Length: 542
Image 1 (tube, rainbow, N blue to C red):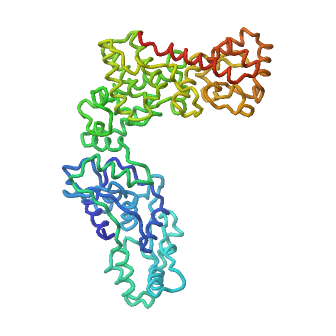
Image 2: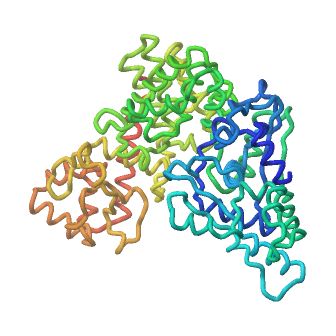
Image 3: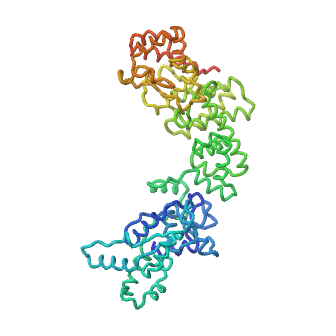
């Protein structure tokens, strides 16, 4: 597509944006650099368009920024092209060549204007044509100036060879302006003008019949820089057509509920889908029923807040100190919320049924069940949970769960099993080794550290069986366990030390291994204690 046609279609309302696109964020320098590339004839990448009819557009749509300022009578045309990828570039050239009376982006207070040095542009063109030894200087041919910079703006305006780009696009006016000027041969002036206005931008156009899934897939594969198109963005556009402002709704939800500040926004849509007996995959989220949407959103939000609080509860919940940092699977909050909602709305709340949720949670973590195919897995798990509550049918994966087979040799802190073990230690209380006092998780979550029991500097052992929670390791430092725990026994007594160790899932008999610096024996004894704790948490007969 030629630049002149892109500008014309934008001005006339034939080239539009989907409502989900974020605001224009480029700086004036970003716009100037793009213009340098166009004047210099450099490649600026591809644009991705979708052909559509206005009434049948798959998204809510809007005009490109600035169009209404320079064309107050504009209306979105019947046949349109929707810019799926290339909003920043399209908006940038329109802003530069039409000069709407608005700032470039929302962070700036005043508009910018873009000028081309006509004399320098012609010199550059001649250098290219004659293959001059000195390279053309397109970089200094384009100038950006804020209207607030009155001194610089006046200086540029006084130089008759600096032409505002909103005047440059009018060839007739341009020729009239420089007619008779010996420094600006008209033939060369026309060449410069045509070079720019006929600059060809590479465009990929998807036909009207393209499915929504394919649109998104194509976009995601092309969009390697910038922020990817999310399911929430698309849902925002779809629902906007029905008077539902999803972004404003999300903003209010974040003010009301803590979970919404840490999870991805489509999480709420996924819970709505589950509660509507739909698998929470992208296609279903985009086709979500908009009737009674606000009630569905609030119901899902309440359930997610309950699930979030349950996961972060360090006494009666799941011991997650920090959702973003220590949740074994952040995606588990979706089926967890649906299960909690099911018990509440169906008058099924009881200790036994909540124990079913607990068994599901811990078995899922220690079986690494949410490493892949999360959406279909959460749908299947929710259905199985309902059958368990209503018919007493224990899910097969829980019935066959074998704690003895859990891989406790993990060393990565990103592992679900590693984080699950840390959560179990939180729930046990993890008394401070030095003082014997509770670590006050609620007050000092950010100060809690994961430390090595047998110092890493000496034993080089990173597996979770050698790790635990501490508030500080300064007094422990690099002391061998024999030295450190003898000090603790001297200060606190052996019984108190054993009590403290038990809150770290270290059995009393492991104290002897610590006092003799027997790493392997210690880890084997601790492994047994952790397995027994997992068995206690996954109680099928609850």
